[in-house]
Amino acid sequence: MTIKEITTSIEQLAPLSNAEDFDNVGLLVGNNTTTLTGVLVTLDTLEETVEEAIAKQCNLIVSFHPIIFEGLKKLNGNNYVERVVLKAIKNNIAIYATHTALDNSNKGVSAKICEVLGLKNTAILIPKKTINSFSDEAAIQNIGMGMIGEFEAEMSETDFLTFVKKTMKTACIRHSETLGKPIKKVAVLGGSGSFAIESAIALNADAYISSDFKYHDFFKAEKQLLLADIGHYESEQFTKNLLVEYLTKKFTNFAPALPAGRIILSEKSTNPIYYI
Image (cartoon, rainbow, N blue to C red):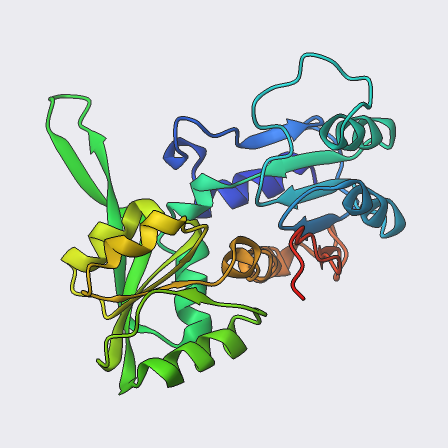
């Protein structure tokens, strides 16, 4: 089995054509024709991630975030990005990133958050518009950023925040003013999601869970919903589980080519933020 077979499978879940224009997705380091020895799935690719791949004899790292984002002009090892790339190349380890291609998947990052929280009747929060190649009309597909769904039973704002804090394994939730209204309909978006606050309000969400809200973003709640910033890493942490589950199920019948247990969930937390 080659690296290409794994990456092709990932692209059935998260086509690279669905990634945002600013993004850098796909095979960032390595060669598609390389014979696969194992896959290490992670949220970020750091030096310790490459070391983990070496220790576990995985020559492909499937990462959510791209280690190379704005491009490289030098490879001198002067920063963590250069050191990661150099270490990967030296040890013949390929690096593949999905990022916004998986963000825009209807079975991707936000869908996994909905699953973890137990939200039902889910739908895309901000459907992605594409221009029809035969006309100038924009077609809305069943892909896009974020999702919105409902709890089976409503809960108080305090119970909601407590539930989210525990379920999403976060040490801290920054939230907007509580409104004394029950929470049932909830919008979610993994990663930086301030751009979708208005969309959550327009769809009558009682609460919106995302991350990286700035000071003035909390004013955008406009007493219409409860904003909950759970942290960037925390909002995306289950993405690597999603990819491992998907690939393991996909390649069950390929055991002779890829030995069982060779699709491995990284044990390392790559969260750069700590709380006291």
